[in-house]
Amino acid sequence: MACTTPPTVPVLVYIQVAASPTPAVTYAAGNAASRPYVKPGGELDFSTLHGCVMVTLKITSAGYYFYDGYGRHSLAFSDDSTKPKAVLDPAARTHHQFPNGFSGSGSPTVTFLYHNDWDGGQHDGKKHFPTSAYGVYIGNAQGFFATFDPIVDNGGNQL
Image (cartoon, rainbow, N blue to C red; front, side):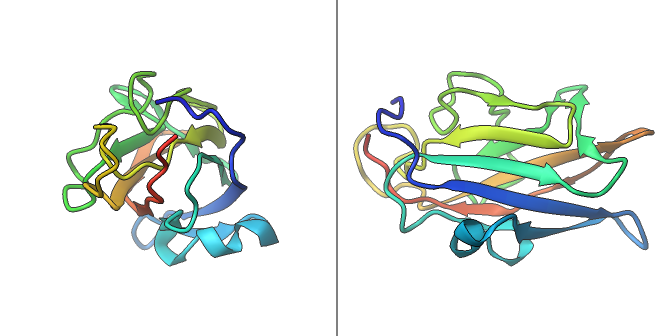
């Protein structure tokens, strides 16, 4: 279902990329209003929000961007956080958690409206997936760099 009310809160997340000794990222809230919703390791905790959330992910490390190519389109997603490697590509406008798709593929900043439901798109209001997994595909001058898969605590949006 589409979000019919304005987003509860805009959430800004800064992502810093490190290449050595192994690829790694760190996440931080981009402003004070985002702090309650951004946890260590990139977890987005929207469990207390029962509406749509406008999310901006911004890579702050020079030379890195959200990779778009070869089947990787900046972000990945799985309704079920216990299976984060079985991700769905949210670029499709038909995915219930990304009703408007997302913008910014191939750049350091990606923005999307997150529906924030926990019923897996079933529209039955049941708590099928209170926790989902999202992934970020990172690129650099050499092309694809790495994938990182944090989780999202969903708030049960019924709109």
